[in-house]
Length: 425
Ligand SMILES: *Cc1c(COP(=O)(O)O)cnc(C)c1O
Image (cartoon, rainbow, N blue to C red; front, side, top):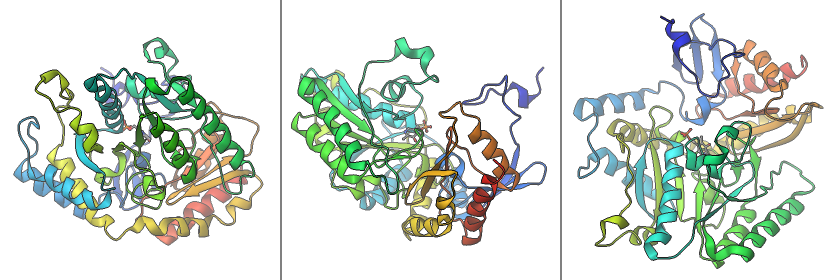
């Protein structure tokens, strides 16, 4: 029999060439303790999920107390306090036109649900709209629908024939002091407009990561870009899906990225930060209009979609506890805190296209190699890890997205380490 560490097939891993996984024994605050006793500062919130640090006692306690009462129950025909309480607690944080909450359990399913709801809205109304518009570089998850609207790459090449066709538009991908930002916006909007001119009446929905595309390499777009895009989409009656799986829960400095624009999306997808990083949970939140299009005496017009762990009470309890901790709005201070520490780093000759928003900061390593296969990010990651900081570059893009609970001293160490490691590249 294989030893368990070999038997486990890991995500996004080429096992032939991958290094051994580091075994984590415990997490406390921003620190992860490894089996060999080393400590790492988690500068990426463990794949963007952790908000208040690891092992936060308030969230741990909330999960424990809920588990003693009710760990889980079927969510069709039944309800429970944690699911209702979480909606009540979330409402004041959200735009008031978003009134209907659909639970699932991860970011991909939150997106999948939005895509299916948007599509079925038109089907229910007897309108033929079957096209989605998405953005170059977009990432919306790993289930087939989510992959279809995401960027095509060598990662999903095997599935090409299984994916549905999508109209694609450039994403501006701007950065601090970008001299060509207006041009980029214009180019993207021109392409966007053309698609709507050609086939506006066939388009069901537009899906976008608002303000920042995560997986594509923390590529930014401005709020006015979102607003202009919305205007065009509205004229043809297409629905708007804002995938806030990464940007939600304060990552961009406001509770939602949507809050920085005047946009009124028809769907918002939330997951990652929702439980503070403790348990899998997701929400797809939509409007009265969309909800009403599913009301009928015909059973076939209902939304026939659900997961075994829909609205898991433990996840909801964790999310409620996490929202309590977010009441202080710790995310509002992140941008200033980060920019202060990043000042020296952004002037380094190996640092290109520095960018960031709220609690997210990124730059590209100024080397010849390009793209996801580039080794430079990996080399850099190893150098930084040796000094006690966990990062996970996206190709040559290096980013940090720490939990809001990171101390000033730890944040200083993160940026000091990033800078120091550049000298060894
Ligand atoms: C991570 C991510 C997803 C997918 O979420 P999973 O929980 O990993 O399935 C979808 N959209 C965006 C923007 C993400 O960053």
